[in-house]
Image 1 (cartoon, rainbow over the protein chains, first blue to last red):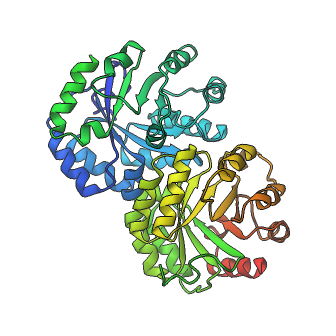
Image 2: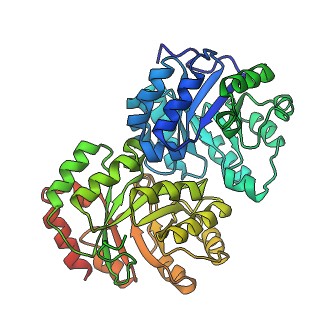
Image 3: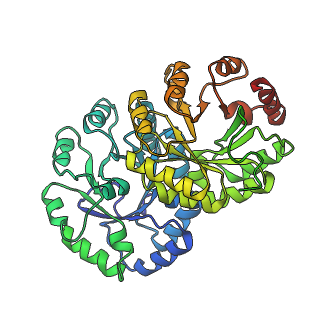
Length: 225
Length: 225
């Protein structure tokens, strides 16, 4: 872990690239195209479908080959056996794991404790959660998460759900966690997001489906600063 | 799919072996110990942590090597991008996929539709769901699930949550889905479960941690009949 450029996210803002390409050869090709970016502000996320198709044990070594020092997040969206899933991820050498805010509270508790024990950051994803319900889960935890993801799922996005900036302010009022936002961010609305206190900007397809992903990443990096 | 012994679960009851060993070499060794079981009543589940560690693309061929004709379930516990996750699983050759009942409704809808399009069974897992909430999600779906899993998560089990047989009767009152039960089943209480209308009995550690898993499976198979 000591090798990672900014292992504990001490210096926001960050740009997080969510890699949801489900296939390892395509991922490898994509990583080779962006390998020259060395910014400590770039976080790399192994997306849930990618993890389920290829497995963390096979994926992380490929990511480390191209980005030995970058902060890596395993988007596990854990719902059960929190401790077991963190153990699996830790062995592979990621920096952080994501639990679903929809998980039963004992799962979230065990997940965060395991992250602390292993020196990983614990992230919690609000996808599909009712705000009040998630707030009461987080407030009653002895050990809170390091990052809260305010998330609009891709399926919800397509179905037209509203994004809500004020949720960020509400989470910040009771939690010291950094706030990440996923879903619907673009070069056009990112300064709006920044004004609402976002610490981590999560972008997926807008980067990996662009013609020149390295230049798109640099554009995003300069926009968030 | 045509090779599978009972591809559409037309003849319950079934015993489902949930394989949550996270490591492929250990899984391989375990499968070799039970390879002589040929019952069409045995369903094999690729557990969530195992999928996340090894990847479906690497796991399913190993399962098919030992059990070419058995019904295989990918316990994806999908929360987002339902269609993408089903596509990934379908390519590997499983018979069924599991969506989380906690997922937003557009995800569940897309997931079930994709399963129908690909000829897979769509399962929904109640882990962590409020009954009334899940009921209203399922009742308002045009295409309902083929199987509902009444699930007590391992973390909840440890924390002492109550199992509730009457949930089975309630689901059967409005859905034609088969009912699977996971969590807390043993040779001691399985006839109790049977009397409450369970169609699929999901067992994990009680089988794969037993000294002679093949004989334990046979004991369970004779108990559910």
